[in-house]
Length: 78
View (cartoon, rainbow, N blue to C red):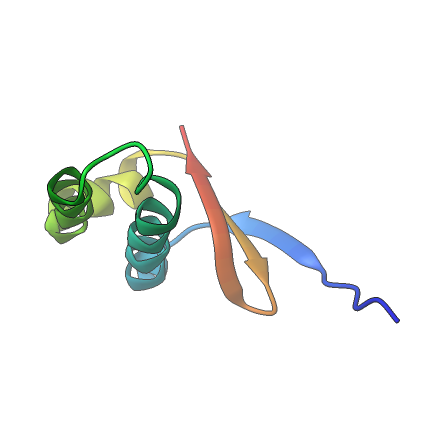
């Protein structure tokens, strides 16, 4: 029997920043390790510490959060 998961999309908020940063870092670790060396991956992940940059994504851009069961599984901004 297949489990049906419901994907929900909504506008992002400052409250989402910790989960957004975590998802960003986990995604880089999981998908970029074949194309970048460990030092490059670590430097890229360090960008999650730039709070001004991340706050501006929420405050100055149109941010969409994708969730399944209240867990953030994706995001996009423009």
